[in-house]
Length: 341
Image 1 (cartoon, one colour):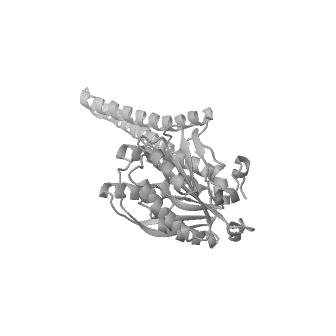
Image 2 (tube, rainbow, N blue to C red):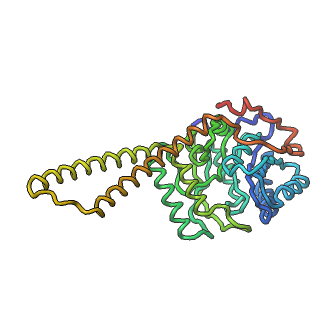
Image 3 (spheres, one colour):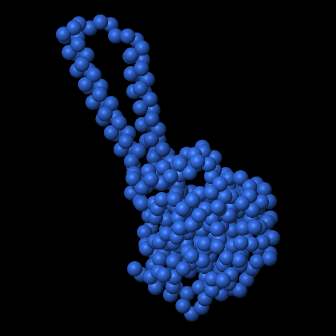
């Protein structure tokens, strides 16, 4: 394990830890979150910057973030031009992170900021990715727990990347792991898969996930369903294979049924078959064909989006940190940001 690469990155001065926090309509919780986060990072023995990303919030989140930045010189604010979605907002925050290591955490306080000390300890041991793995998920319905459980197991079976079970975005990445991650600029970003795809030594830190502190979740079941499709399609062609196998099975079944009809006609004669049976067969075959076309369309649509090569996001305003940490650690240039060590 190339363990010392991470810990030697900041020789000649204190290392910088960046904490990236994507925010969307988090006004009720953001003040309490920052209070706990600030207390959690104070004793780490590291310079700290906190990168808040406002993902087109419709409430007073950006005003709250501006107040927090005015009081805490370690805070920077990336205000996106509109709502681009969590995965893109997270990417924007990582693009602006300057640290020797970067922690990703949500603002809803389901993931405890106090666990950052354990993530940093894993990084100091030499791991490039230290991810928080949920032992329990408090405050969530049984249906959501079951669907999350099934999703991670299915991804591990059909995907080419082994995504750790019961693991969200809450994790730490070393600078070289972050550089590798940011080298991938694909439009359809499933960050949990990308975190695993880059490889490098990784370690799990178990924890108990708390219920949401305030506000309401933005993830209804329809959005979770679409999110699961976004997770499956970039990392496996399994659905296309299923469609192929399904077509082969139906073709074989039709061939066997055709032989049966021929034999029945030669031996017993052929009474006029009933209209309902023919209608059922036609509807089943039509349904399978439409489903197969839908699967092909999902992949084709992603190819279409990638070929346009649009920027992932636009920043309305960037406010850098004002404290001593900001002066001691210059911004990372984009070409440096993409270099893999």
